[in-house]
Structure formats: C-alpha cells, structure tokens
Length: 418
Image (cartoon, rainbow, N blue to C red; front, top):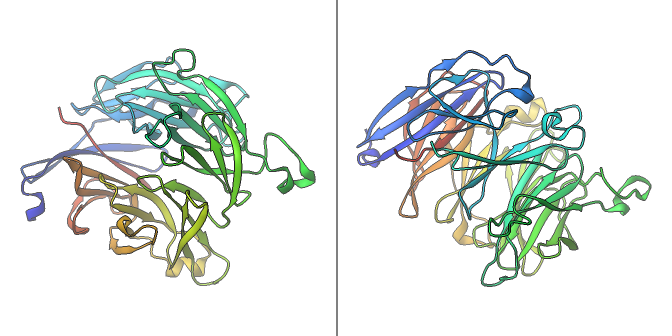
C-alpha cells in the first residue's frame, strides 16, 4: 500500500453499466485498507424507460436511493435494480439541493410522463446521497438535452437573485426557475423562458422556438453578476442579466461545444474539437474568455485529444479534463483516449497544461477532500473496470483497484460518512 493511502478514510460509489443494465460497488478505505462491497443486484424492473426507478444516490449506510418517477416517492433498498441508470445531476453549490436532468425521449425530446408533449423536465431533490433524501418537485422545461447553472448575490453583484437556469438543446431556450426557499412565490417555479434565437442566423430570418441555437454551456460570474450561455449552433455567447432575464449582448465565440466558468468567475473556459483541418489527427481546443473585457485572452490546441468531461479540485487550483474517442477511423488510430489532462489554474488567464496522466477510459472523476483541499482524485475506468486513485498534490497514480467487469459506462462519486 502506498504512503498516500496510509491514513486515508473514505467511501466511494462505483457504478458500471452498458446503458441497459448495471451494478454498483462501494469502495471503502479505512486506515489505508481497501475493500470492495457490491450492492446486491435485483431483477430488472421490466418497465418502460420513463417509468423505471431513477438512481439518485447511495446512502451513508450503503443502500441505493431510488426515485419512483410516477409516484415521486423515494425508496432506500439494499438491492440495486439491474436496469436502473444514474440520473444526470447538477449540484447547487449554494445549497443541499441536487437537480436531476431528464432529456426526454429520443424522438421528440418530451418527458411524456410529466410534461406530455410540452417539453422535458428537471427534478429537484435534497440530500440525494443520504437516508434523508427528500423529493421536492419535478419541473417542466424545454425539450432535449439540458445543462444547468445557478445565480446568487455576491459583493460585486448584490442585486442578483437566487435562480436556476436550465438550457434546452432542442428548443433553443433557457428556463429561469426560482431557487430561493425564502421567496415562496417563485421558489421552484418557472419564472421566465429566454428565447435564444438569433433570426439573422436562421433560414429565412425565422424567429422563435424551436431554433438552431443549440445551447450547450452555461456559466455564472459573481464578478459581473451576469449569466453566459454558449449558443453552439450560432457560435456565440449570450450575455444574460439575471435580474431582468434579458439578453444584453452577444459575443462571438466560434468553434466551441461547451463553456464553463473557472473558479472566481472572471474567466470562462470554452472547449471544442477540430476534426477537419487534419485528416489523421483530432485537435482538442481550449479558449479563455475574460468576462471583464469580453475578449478571448488565450487559446490552446492539443493534438490527438478529444476533450470530454471537466472537474475542479476543492480549492479551484486545478482543472481535470477527461478525454474520449472521436473522429474518423484514421484519427481514432492516433487519438489518446486513455489520458486525463491536468491544468494549472493559477496561471490564468494563460492556459497551462501541468501533466497528462494515463488512467484508462474514464467515465467520471471525484475527489477526497479534507479541510477544503483535495487529497485524492478518484477516476472510474469504464473499460478496465478499475477505480484509479491519484495523489491530488502530485497527480500520479497511487492505486489501481479492480472493482467491476469492463463496460462502456461508469461513474464514481464520494459518499458521506455514516
């Protein structure tokens, strides 16, 4: 056992599946000793996708926390139903509420159970990874894949209300939802729907919803008190005032497929991929947008890298980016799909790549934090079925633990202590 794990004390949940069936293992570390405990796998529910139980967490006593989408009841049970899939989650950093995304069915983008033919939905739950998990509400929003972001007052922008913003890919809208329990009139209510359409970029100057904005990237800056939404279809960033919910201006930002804020909120980071300029190599692309000057201040191109998911360590000093496989057959022969990138955010506004760590085909990443600092980095290696553990200070692998059979999809998340 490495010295890094000698005094470690943590529990993590490791989900692995093929998008049809899956399993959960709990990895426990006590005084450096690792153990793997599988949750018993129950029979498949046999229900349609819209009626299957939704995994919203694993409790501190290591039971599956399941939401019945029809009754909205939360159940804790030792057995994990084999065809249950973890919900796509956004955690509100200002509260104990988690927002689970429902992108609707593939054909229409509608959540027919909760919203009929009027859109898809988000579900809000308190204390998801806990025996105290509580369903709050399912809210209908726009159609298609969603992203979420949260606004809040800050010393620089004390007038900003607490709101949740949900973008909808198929409709080209952002739904504005009250997120302040003290404001009963607006709490968990849709306050407004922002139309992201830019008619001059639509065929025939068409205006309205649905449109081709294809929003995919939301970021809030407490420095400016503004919300920034990437319109992937238009190659622009819509700057939204969360007080009025009006688009104040648009910033050209082509070549990016996602946008997020670096800790502190002054710099927004865009990521994208160039599959056209070189027939043999995919080029991963980073850009830094300074919200105070509304200009791109740095760029980075990385050969044979397709950027996937991003994660920040506890103090916001590092950005961890997983990679994936994309592009033509020739490009995929050269692509590095088994590395994780670590960027040093103390160098901002300059982009500084600290290291590339070979960790396998990573599903997700989480951290073991102590007193506001990350001590360990957890990576779920989907194909290898391994939990890969890194020393968060040196970003080197200290343990590769076999957990499950290799599959196409995996997730890892830290559990609260009992």
